[in-house]
Length: 491
Picture: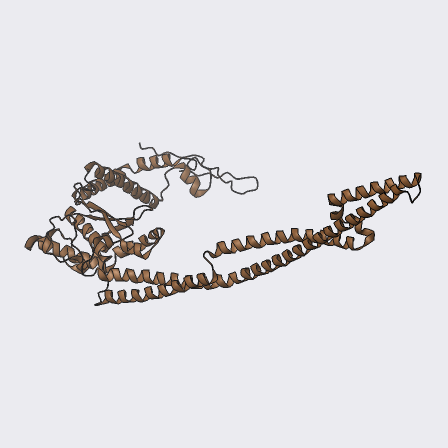
């Protein structure tokens, strides 16, 4: 094989242009690899497919059993007044309780006893779980030969890794599953875990006389609550308060109404004061509005004015001692006396009205001052009533907690299923069909794994082979352009 190097005018070596191999797609690279190593790929693929299928075909079938439980509000939670939204926060911790040591130990004990009882005694003679009520789940014929392990400690450790406990979406449902080669054991293990978890929630500490103790404490709390409620009722009665907020609102409205009335009254009072000051001065007496608005006084003044005009007309035609003039003057005098009496009477009435307005003003001011004192007392009354109401609420919460403890202690000897917040939605049934029963599926998986293995091994061997066989490899390794080649001929 000959090699040639193309030199540039400056004497440096010219870099080769990108080869065609660099622009090839991955598909053509795999085709070249397949045709160059087809015997190796075919051998590895055949052997891997054979052993993979043989392994999958001879592997025992596995069965999956699944059960569901619901975390709900039992009667204890109802008495405790636990909000419904808090259940979502509790579901996550319940998953950990399902796989706790106490629960798994009881599950292993139940499985062992059921497997032995199937050969020796009746299942109904088995002891209750945690001493609670008899479960109503279905039983299957579990035998000792169905157990994967005979040691209880190893069984507990194995079950902890095999149990699949998970929340069912965003609901309060917990799903429990187990995959095993024995369908009966899978169903019995799941049902035993569900039963043990359900009874575990009813397990409480046993203390003699605990129920009577809590009943006595509840009576003491009831006495304190009744005393505080009596104090609160007497306090409201002593201050004449039924509803503090409504009373404050009513007093505020009454004060506003009194202020509006006082403002109007003070405007009228100011007008009366102006008129009364005007009538005290003879020069401004006629400017008083109430004198100018009184019709009787107006008529008297009009008659008096007419009489003055008549007298003036008579005097222009006769002497002052004319009997008609004298008569008119006497009428004028009489009218002036009547006008004076009417004005004095009207002024007296206005002064009386002014005194009434002044008395009403003082009464309204006194009423507003009283309402202000009542409003000032409301914060003090509110603080006292809030203190009594807060004490009553705290004692009520304490009583609720004691009632819950008394209910728990009262159900120790005869536990009730309705007290439990855990409800079994469905026990696991013995799975009739294996999870990998399809032989075609196993063959397809074996072929895919074998093909991947064959190509991986071929690529690895191709990477170890550093021999130069093609033109593009020469240009890539030596960084010089390919000029020609010398063939080998055999004679």
